[in-house]
Image (tube, rainbow, N blue to C red; front, side):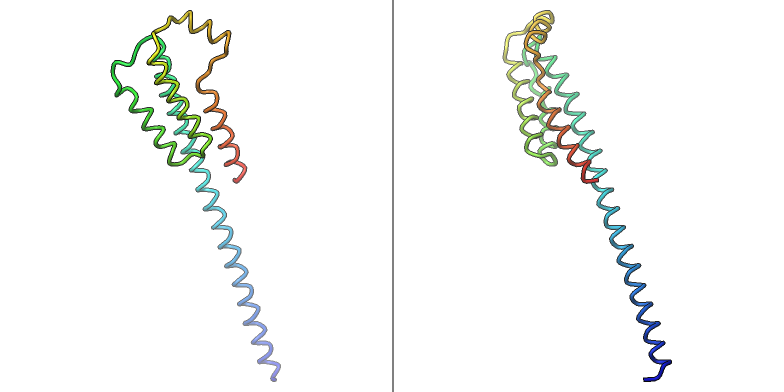
Length: 148
């Protein structure tokens, strides 16, 4: 073979290998970045959803302590949030949200109590209907952040 042909083939082969390496590096970098962006948006979405649920559930729970449920449509917001949680969250978070929902409905079915009595029970028994939910959310978000 002629030395010029060997040199030309070597140059073309080197260009192809260099181009493929550059393409592969760019492809995998972009893919990894897209995955990280998706996870970041998912974490932010879940944080917002969980915060909305906590706010709604807290308002309903406080409301349920001193009066019966006269208007069942007051629960629509919470049921809607649980449905949205069902779409994205893990089982532990979903079960905890459903438990909060049951606690609130049960609380509406109990006779109204005074704030002083609520405070005494809370101090004595450390009642926190959202504790299990918030802990499950924290665990789930922590696992998601590890993937970033």
